[in-house]
Image (cartoon, rainbow, N blue to C red; front, side, top):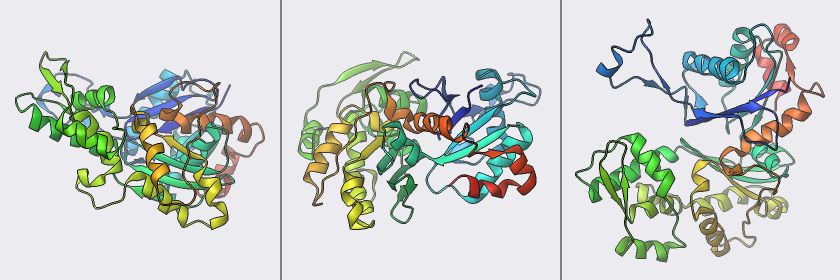
Length: 361
């Protein structure tokens, strides 16, 4: 049985057996509905607060919910049998606390009785997915943005940057814009999320963005409840906020400048290797026009060496941007488990969860 690879994001969980040239067989929402103890649905309509987020800003926060989610993924979704569990590789967000890693290992070995475990950082895995071991990843997730230089398969943590903003903030921004332009329409967060994914795009540059704010073609979108919303200049605001964070009310540099600043704190002999092997990943990075805008901003930046983007190999699945870390995990699983570089049940029983820091680095 192939090892299972799990990439648990704040919004979507990607899971499947380690087959690198295929998309993950499960891409499901991480958010779950809280059910009454007796399993009845009678009281759910009385309470709005029935959802729970096992993962927040990339890190597991609700372990009870995570256990339920993994049980569904492994046994129902992927067909594991109780008593015959296999091996599992987890993707680690940038700067995962040691305590979170240890608790995950404990959960998997003691509750799920897995036979083997490995974890690797998402930045490294995203580079593996495009055939690189050195480069820099710009991961725009639902709950965070991670910029991580990687040299020879090792994240340069001292130069890495994490920003506690992501798709959540962009969804809120879009909702605020719609309140101004469509004051009568009542929008749920789910509605805004859907519109963001379907319509959001990036202007060619800041001048083009300013033009869209003055005059922009409008479209009508019918919501599930029958309301009709007009979408115009708002669609460009979401992407622009990544290049002009002041739109979000933040005093910060745009994403390309942040990348250059991150790499500038690494030894200068590695600058070219890192900048010329830049990988965009995360759902927001797949926005229409984002890659072109990123490349254009990169060509204008003050750095002597300009960032350039790595294109995924043609044989890789479509939409690789959205699950690059999972694909990299599938590639790595094909190496670490057959070569016995992983953490076994015997390792865990002998040393405890702390061995994860020695085995997975």
